[in-house]
Image (tube, rainbow, N blue to C red; front, side):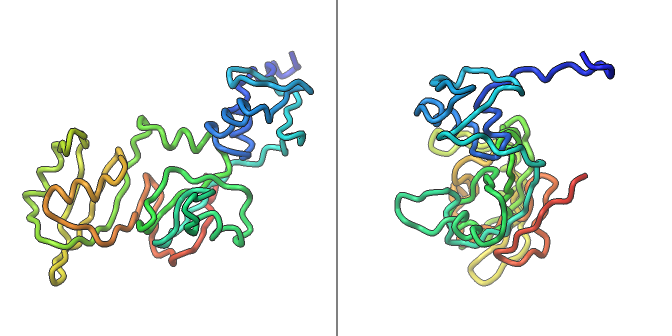
Length: 238
């Protein structure tokens, strides 16, 4: 023990350490370990259920882990037409290809947006933080501006606060406000916490609306504001 009374850092799961170094997500790290790509102190590790201490030397594909960088978060105004994945089997353009020229370190997305959904996407260099922010228990409110074809009343939207079940899938409470009518379209502000796959489109579709534009404007405390499409901004530490 040191004079200050500090205790040695406790051992942690190998995949968690890899994610914290921004090398990959925790799930990816677990797969890399199973694939035999990771060694600790020169010995290959084949199970993710393996703890390492700060003094252990971890290598991936024979290369040591880079020093852990300070945790950072970036806001990205995602354009429509980009897939939020590193490698798309269909060959569609991806967010990470678009970001390659922005001078960022290797980053991970916090959650996903559909290919045609625009707006705020959070990026981080810390796989551990990514996992925490994606957990359902975090429950951050996501707000979307939605343009949809059709008609709807505020009373119908208010009923969504009680949740709705569609084709056997239960959706939790949704806050929705009718902002304006524009020709045959309506503009809505929709807030939800679960973020299930295609939730906004499915729920509004059950009300007879066809979503034709979807823009995420906030994720928890983070706001899209007036960021230009395609812009990236680092979040100041606080």
